[in-house]
Amino acid sequence: MSQTSVVVHPDADAMAQATAARLIVRLIDAQSHRGTASVVLTGGRGAAAIYAAVRDSPARDAVDWSKVDLWWGDERFLPSGDPERNETQARAALLDAVPLDPARVHPMPASDGPDGDDPEAAAGRYSDELALAGRAGSPSLPPFDLVLLGVGEDGHIASVFPEHPAAYDTRTVTAVRGAPKPPPVRITLTQVAINTATEVWLIAAGAGKAGAVGLAMAGGGPVQLPAAGVQGLERTLWLLDREAARDVSPRLRSLR
Ligand SMILES: O=C1O[C@H](COP(=O)(O)O)[C@@H](O)[C@H](O)[C@H]1O
Image 1 (cartoon, protein in one colour):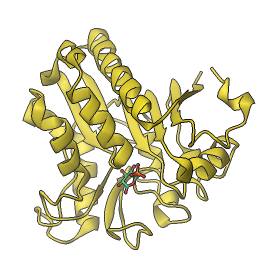
Image 2: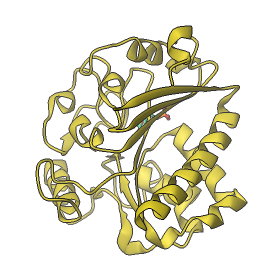
Image 3: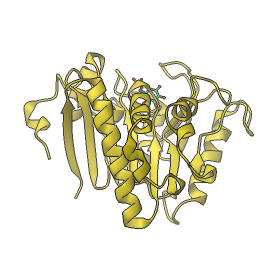
């Protein structure tokens, strides 16, 4: 039975610190349970602050980073090393500072990668990489202990934007063209893939996110508000600051 929880923090900084602590514990728990931990990373401002807080926490040494599998929920389809790539930002904030096994780090392809400037081929390549690491069956994906997702002002998660084809896609990975937020070309896991995770954490800070968060939590449609269409198999956790939680009804805030 899946559980939905909401945690409201005083501000964005407190949220980043608390979420970093929570993430470290999640990795430790997954490793105690099955030896490894598998996390799908997100991009955006909130995520960068969380990654930096993990990097700066002495507790990070309790994680066996050589046994962490990292995947990405979405990527801006730009050349490798571009500062706008989610991979570049995660590496700068955390990944370059911890002893990961490079073979367990799975960035989405870049626009100067093996498929060149062809996002559909790159999405297919990432889908194959997931399937190779995955369980047989449909969808063929590795077990994800946790998917982290930023929530956009319009309610997008990963690069699944409201009313866009990706919000209807039933494959695991898809290319996005014409995204309303730059850059227009992206690659994203779909809601189908995200919803195979044991836990999904949705992160939002600031008043600009309040409308989307309030509507998604009140039961918006998954195509109109992609954030409303994701949940973990065991747990869905909304991690908010006070401003982003402004429109969440008190009844939902006390969900546990
Ligand atoms: O473009 C993106 O935006 C979302 C949200 O970012 P934020 O800065 O508003 O937190 C992010 O989750 C996604 O990974 C990224 O590609």
